Image (cartoon, rainbow, N blue to C red; front, side, top):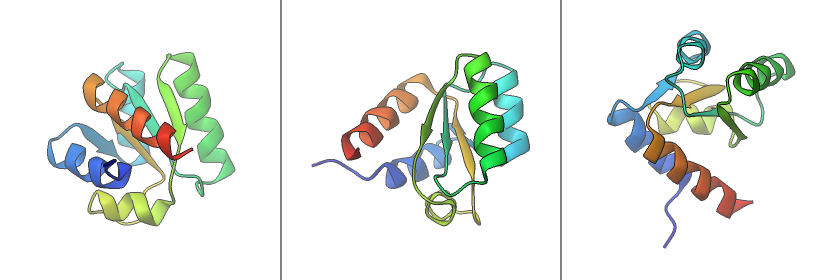
Length: 102
């Protein structure tokens, strides 16, 4: 049985392997700590472009997944447009889970 990527995001957050918030994610991407950036499908066009460009320049994988309220709820926060995963194993697992939904 395939677990929900949202459930897995919550586990990653509790394990300290997920960073939320645009400024914190920017820092993680720029410093090379981020392995995966998950951008909410309903994030603003500016946010999508900013993070897509930043991730492309630094070779960080990017996926568009979920809604801001779903992602925020999964990690115990309010609406969350961007979340970065700083663990290679968790980022790989999340990518596979999200790809299986598409």
